[in-house]
Image 1 (cartoon, rainbow, N blue to C red):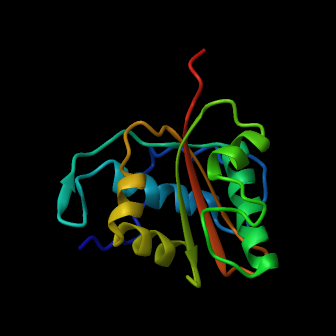
Image 2 (cartoon, rainbow, N blue to C red; image 1 turned 90 degrees about the horizontal axis):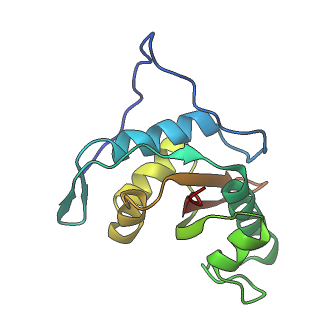
Image 3 (cartoon, helix red, strand yellow; image 1 turned 180 degrees about the vertical axis):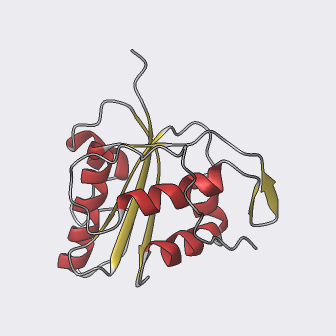
Length: 159
């Protein structure tokens, strides 16, 4: 089991670029928690995952996450499939993301960033998404009422 705690910021830490989209959570904190897991060996289920590169914030992925979180809240459902039948990949493209969608995590009822990340890390499939080295961008959002969480991972388009 992995237990995440807040890390003390050292003087040479750089504040991550978390864009300008409002997503009803502390973006710097949640990105730091995700990267703390990614950059150390993390156990997903019974498998120890090797560290992978830190991930960067992307507003288009965050928009797809926010739209899905708010839709689940408004329509009172909990699923990776939207009420309109959309997949996370379709929602990512509709939000303007030009990279490749890699994965989606959803959660319901967590009180804060630490709790939802810990919950995802304790779930094998969700943890595997977080530790997927193919992903290099992320967007996370919490619904307006704060009950529904969505994380969307993607791979930046090669330029």
